[in-house]
Length: 77
Image (cartoon, rainbow, N blue to C red):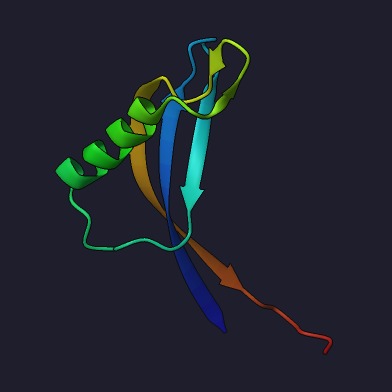
């Protein structure tokens, strides 16, 4: 039996140059690009996630929907 899960991945670059990703397993699947951009800008604007002078989510890099299919070959339950 195959199961497919879709997640929304929001990728950002911190002010330290490191890329970080927020993965959302539950989201409105009808989100459009403008709504996702507004969400990412809200995360950036909050400026609350980081350590010391490093902001983990300082600039938007990409937003992607990723579908993963899992196939159970055999279950031993």
